[in-house]
Length: 430
Image (cartoon, rainbow, N blue to C red; front, side, top):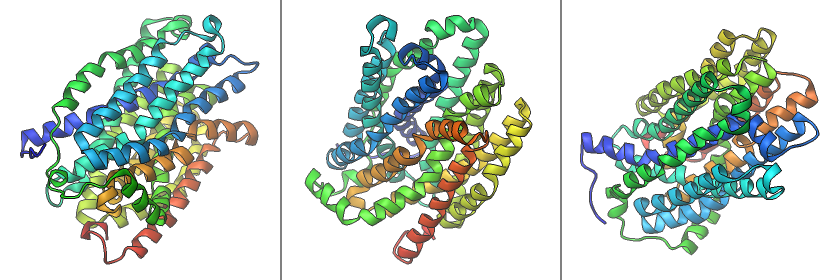
């Protein structure tokens, strides 16, 4: 298919169609993190709340371990057959995992089959998500107008923030309308059902997606073997890129997916307060992401990346320490909005940088592999790592150590990548 992406309103439509799958992915991921305590009780009953919650977060993290495999296999497929066809496949796999999780009966009904099926659903979601994000980001970079790649690619993450806001709003509404016992027993499934109901609409949007001009004009389409070979030859770039992404994935899962659990179980705030904070953080992320992308278009990716990594390294733990010493709705909101600013500006510059760093012939596979590795090693296990650090250190602000570590490795990787690629990359990178 060689159709081009027209200008104006149709270009905005293309952004909406391609980011719709990202919405569904993050919608389900957020719900799993927020309803972790209910899911733990239904599928992973244990002798202690800590053990049950850790098993739930381990299954949550297991989905991220599938991302690198999905990034290589599905990313290579997208680099071969095209963005449109490939993104329809990723959506199909993602929807299958989501529907499976929604329909699985609890442990009391089917025993060990319950957690096993939930795990399979998470693995399917992770396999799909491994290439979904990279495919969407690369597509947006390929349809971007000159000098606006950062702004265009920011809408990939922007769609995820809309998912956070919608999911948090649904949860807030359920908490107002239903008794806690009813939510724990079956009400937590309602938002997941809502996600399933919008799957056909997203399929319709994806089917009407046009191929990017840049990909359509490419004369050589690499085979999977060629993609694997090129990735192996560029393994240093992939690993360094993974470390650069570490701050994005850790910050995102800390301030969105883990935040409601942190607010309820660590700060002992009400469920409504924790959800409302998360909703407002999603709005804040949505505001800062395009600003970060546009700023990197104007002054370069590197200054934004370095400045935000330094801010995260210097302020994350002190900010969380202040919060745990004076827990309140307002203080949680202020601290997470600060971390949201750091995340939004960093991610807005990082996404376009990653599309420009990767060799063009394996752009989706390389981007997806680097991002998926970062999510598997850092971001996806942020809820579990945060819970573990608090449990064994006794320091309620211990998640700040984890994000500070991610900021440090991201800073080192950014400095390495730009020094190594000096003079060879797009001017916007400098």
